[in-house]
Image (cartoon, rainbow, N blue to C red; front, side, top):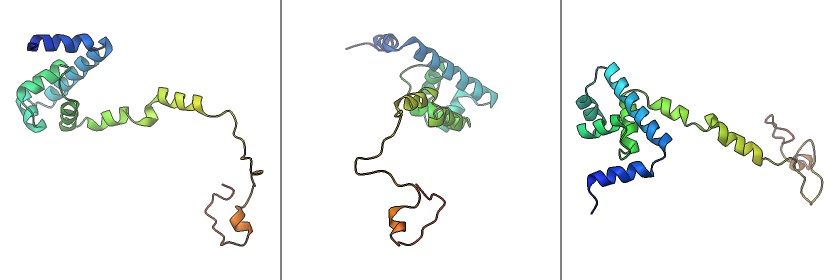
Length: 137
């Protein structure tokens, strides 16, 4: 059975260096935000609903700390919305570029016939006139 030191080592070995640095940075930033707000680690632990040791590990950037603990701490510190904004789809430059690359170069009409421009076929056949500003779509 692995010791706790072996578990820590295996977690760190399997983690990419940029992820490790990001966790440490996030932990430091949470620590700074807590201190700026004049909260002790005990106060933060109580408000987050976790133990003092978990807050200490989170601020140290320990990789075994649950994501929801980080998010709850950000919520208590008033910074959760900033995290949500960072992860918003519209801010995903790479993702949006990949979507653009997959767009077709041109769009062809179906084999059933040419697309009609103007009013929809149902409207031309005497159906009720539904003008909603999207005529032709």
